[in-house]
Length: 127
Image 1: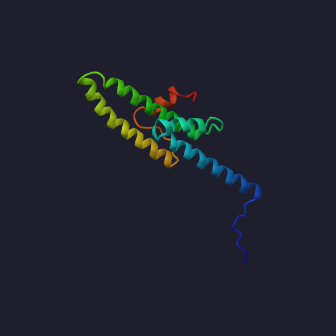
Image 2: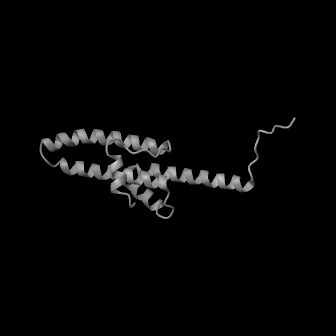
Image 3: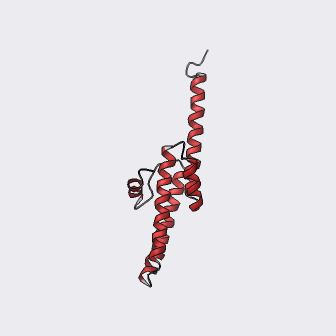
């Protein structure tokens, strides 16, 4: 007996599936690179400049927000005592947000970083 449940992909459908899969892998790679240092953010931005992958753009916005938050914490740390306390607490929170963003990019999830990730999307929507 012939199995009627097996479906053969049309060559065009098969090629489209390959392109979609490659595009998803490229977008995921760009998103992951965005979280690896400031240089990674710049590289991801340049890599995604022409393609404008939505998933990569999302994580580039999140990474940019985290980078600017770290810069703001660095400036706050210049204030004696209270600034130092805010900086120490802020760095641990920032590290947690960075880790969650990186894990979301690796696992191909378009999920904002905790606490202020939605604001990053709102503020950097033109990127």
